[in-house]
Length: 430
Image 1 (cartoon, rainbow, N blue to C red):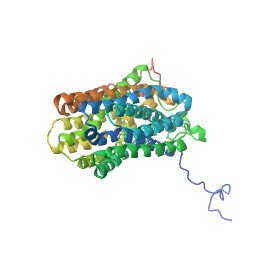
Image 2 (cartoon, rainbow, N blue to C red):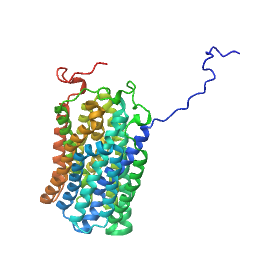
Image 3 (tube, rainbow, N blue to C red):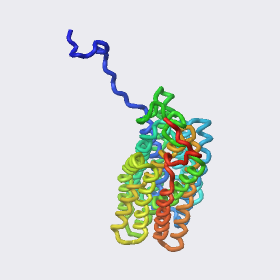
Image 4 (spheres, rainbow, N blue to C red):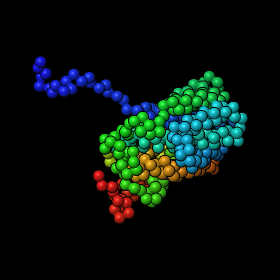
């Protein structure tokens, strides 16, 4: 029988069905996790703040201190995360953090004043840190250097989706329940977080090897399974500190804007809460693309160039918000914020894996995120105090613009893995 020139062996072999790598399930579960622990738990606060502040007669400085309390809790969790990851593993730590997020948010909906809400929002921050840090470390386990930035960006899409959701939900609840709509908002967001906690527990896995798989990427099979195998150069403490300073600048600045821009639009620019909510939803919609866009860019041009590009965009964003150039400046500022919102965490997740390898990624990411937590703890408090003394947030946004301008210079000095001195940081030969 003529086989058309094909070898007889294998001619009748059945074709293998294409299989979706489980790493993409990790990305989906990671997106849900970030949707809850950052998107809902942190960025919905800015949407809920005008209604909550009016209902409870909160001052500007108290609003800032509540935000700072959340970040202080996050900072504490960052310090604890490596311990819990070693004891429980990433999957259990993420699920436990999401349960704490859910419970504390539901209870905030019954808060009756500044102090109880402050205490509960500190716990929300603890849960956020326990969920987010291990989740981003898992990305380094499941993806090699060539695809790590892209994958981290896809995970952080959850932030943008959450902002869209909150921007549509919270004004609707305000229309239904009036000044007390913020209570229903916290309870609904907490209930969603409980469902996501269950999903994370069911779907997440700590390592590809648990399922007999290799990480996703174009490098050699198994390259990302060992510290020296993902194309990284063993990093010095100086590199970790340098990355930490980059993350501190980002944390200091982006939450000034994220916490107070809706309040600024309502209280200083005369917008209705519903209109401000729609604008905030645009941040979420545009932000969906920021992580994958800048993550893929950093895969191509390097982490240093990626950091510089993001800080340049954010400098323009904050300056436009603070200069009162006209209504158009707020519109453009919101677009720029959305374009760059999740880019720094995306690139940082990839950079930690590049420099440290998967074996040391958890500890290094925790240290670097501690810098980030310190920055975002200080940012809202400083902005709230400046606004209390001046009656406007303009000075706070200009301070943020100056800081990200410095960030461009700090990122420019960052040494890429391949540029590390061979005498101290030898590049592993293939």
